[in-house]
Image (cartoon, rainbow, N blue to C red; front, side, top):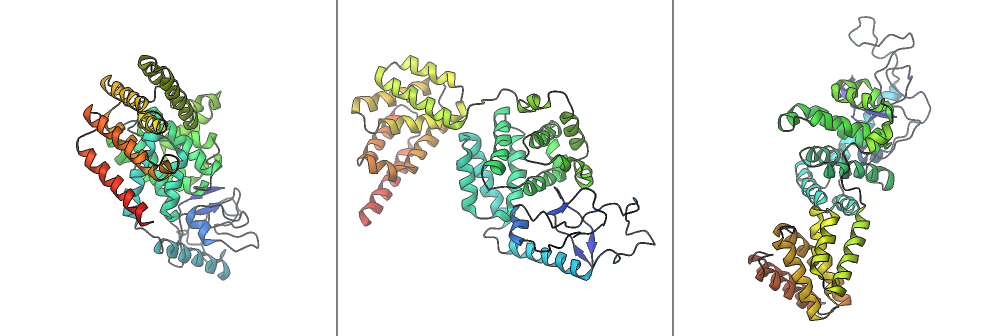
Length: 403
């Protein structure tokens, strides 16, 4: 199955973008089988629709000639029953109703999604992005997530683009966030603005072609998607390039590395490696060895996780070890490895877990406050952060006292 965005009309009604076709359909219209029930939620959110429901395709007639509405011999009602028209109208109305009931406007959804994607490029945690998107509860706009996450990665590094490819696979194969329909619609939205994208990113066409080919390889999209006439017309040379990439020898090995070596390490493995080197540092207090191990991780985008885990692992340790851990963070900062912004993100994430941390370490707010003071003294955190941090702790204490 593949996704289409047809612009044909029947009785003045525009056909919805999430239409599905089956290879070899004889009619221009639909429904060679008897099942007519379509879940409107499925059509909007992108979940799979019933395979027995075939919706509006532009195809050849039984005589092998394309049916053209401009043909003087064409009878627009010849292949369409009144029952079929009613079904089409109902689908369109239901789709519009779902969008009308969305909790957010499209503009607000875009702003939220942009922030989530930017954070994802920093932390690389797919579960966190999936959970954050699900919390928005606006599946009607899911195609915008696909379009925007690809678009925002085009001016990033190969690491971010590899993350996006993995996320598209994860969101369809590992969780119920996106569907093949929605992924396809997201690409079609990209095709519509590719000329504008190319002005800022000249290599955008090649990169989007790689995304397309990789999605087919990962079974995020069906190969039939690249053969769809509508997709071919919208995507043009981008689709053609993706087809050529998929026709090469050893295509699997080449496309799996289409974004270069990247980082390649799963997030969970990174967290384990960080924990191990921090535990070793607490035992040995060898700051040079710890610095070397951190540099070998080659994850400068993930240093906020080192900050967070360094503080969390020190909460139940002695004051000397807590001061020593602060010394490691300061050393990383002076060596130019740890940036202030990463430190701020790391401390903010610690405060995000303060409720849970206090369950195991009741004086966690006070210990974290001392970490903040030492970080400010070493210029790792801006002086303004102390006030923000005190507000967070005071708010937490006030909530606890009320409970």
